[in-house]
Each structure stands twice: as structure tokens, then as C-alpha cells.
Amino acid sequence: MKRKKLDIAILGTGNIGTDLLIKVMRSEFLQCSLFVGRNLQSKGMSKAINLGVTVSDQSIDILKENPDLYDLVFDATSAMQHFRHAKVFKELGKTVIDLTPAKVGILCVPSVNLAECLKEKNINTITCGGQASIPLAYALGTVHPDIDYIEVVSAIASKSAGPGTRVNLDEYIETTEKGIQMFSKCKKSKVMLILNPADPCIDMQTTIQATIKDPDMKSIIQAVNKMVATIQRYVPGYKLIVPPTFEGNRVIMTVRIKGLGDYLPSYAGNLDIINCAAITIAEEYSKIFTLTKSEK
Image 1 (spheres, one colour):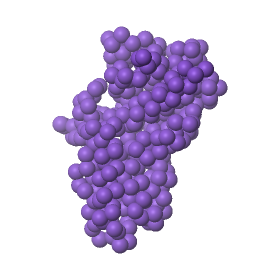
Image 2: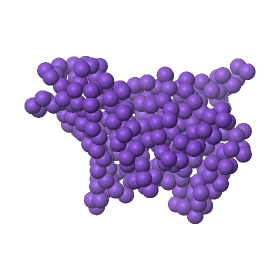
Image 3: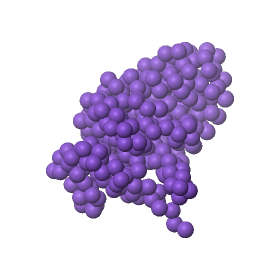
């Protein structure tokens, strides 16, 4: 018997929301019943209309008025807007996967704590830099639970950063730093994001530096390689390009993330890593939801 797909809505029609839509349309577990924004003339809306997807420019209002049309919603707007949206979805009893750095709900990194997050109604995907770096910080923490300091620098193509990303830069840094400390148990963290205007556009790269006394490099390398392999199952373009190296008192490593080119070209790995994380969460949620629904 073929499993019924989970009806989802996408709120936010910028770069993240539109790339997410294309990934949803490829999923065997999800189908988009509503693609929602505020401007029918936006590039994202035009793309959705051309794909035959039902759209609305009524923003959160259309979702409030039609809760029966969807079982789960992706919020791809901004952190400030999500604080308001979260209250609405809570009143409606809807599960929301939050792609903004609002950190209202549980912080989720699929390669680390997916099962725990599926029990919650508001699931936060942190940031693109967080999805790239936190799994590796977690791997370091499993070997050395007493890390003093972790620094993360991500560089993305300026063209891949839409208005929502730019308005959320402070929240991006705060939420990513919180995630690094929470998952790695390090004492202090620092995060930086570089929007690189180079032409041709650069691929997303993230460098992690951790201050560790007398690191067990063999165990670190094993833990990091295992984590990278796990991430590659849902983010195919994730690659460790500088393996863990000890310099001075720091362990340093760098990853590169190439996108699938679903909406923007492959340089936009920042879209892929957060959207692939969101899709992974939603697909696992759909298996639980459809099973529970069939038992009622």
C-alpha cells in the first residue's frame, strides 16, 4: 500500500523558501499544499506558479483560515516574524519547522538529535553555518568534553543571501553560538559569517577551530569522519576539504558545501544544508504522523 504524502505549507517565498519548495516536490513523503508569501510578483511566487503549486499572498492569515489544508508548516521568513508566527501555530496545534534563527523551539541537527526533536511541535534548524559546524563540534565534544573555545567562520556567496538572511545576521550569530556550546559543551564560542561578493561566486565553506589541550587526534579524526559520512546521507554536497589538523593549541578543519542547484546554482550550499536538514526532519515526522493518523 502506497503511503499518503504529508501535506505541508511553506511560509516565505525567498531563496530559502523557493529552494525548499523544489526539494519538497521531489520528496516521496511530502507534498506542498500552500506556498505562502506577500507578493505574487516575487521570483519565488513566479517559480511556484510555473510549477503548478497553489500560492497565496495572504501570508500567515491564509494559514490561520485554512488549517485543514496542511499538517506541517515550514517557516522560511525571519526571526522577528517567527516569534509572532509561532504563537499562531501553537494555537492551531500545528507542527512547525523553523528555518529562521529565532530559536523559539528545540534546536535540531538531524545527524545528532533528530529522534528527540520529533516529539516537539516547534523545531528550529538553527542556521546554515550551524548545520555545517555543529555536528563537527559535537563530534569533537564526544572525544573532549572539556573544550575551552570553538570558533566558526563561514563564507557564503553574497548572491545566495536574500533579504531574510541579511536582516537576521545578529540572530544568526547568537543562535549559532548557542548551538555550538549546547551540542559540544565547550565553555565559549565565537561565530562569524562572511558574505563574499566575488564573481564567479564562491562555494560555501566553514572552518572550525577548537582550543583543546593534548588532543587525541586519532579519536578526533575517527569521530569527525563518521559524522561527515552521516551528514552526506542527507547533504550530498557536504565535503571535508581540510581534515582535523593540530596547530599550536588548536584543532582546525574545513568543510565545503556545494548545493544541488535546485533554485540557485550549486554555489548556494548554504541553502542546501539548512533545507536538506529541514526536509530530513519533515520526512521522518511524516512517517510518525501518517502512522499515528492511520491508527485513529
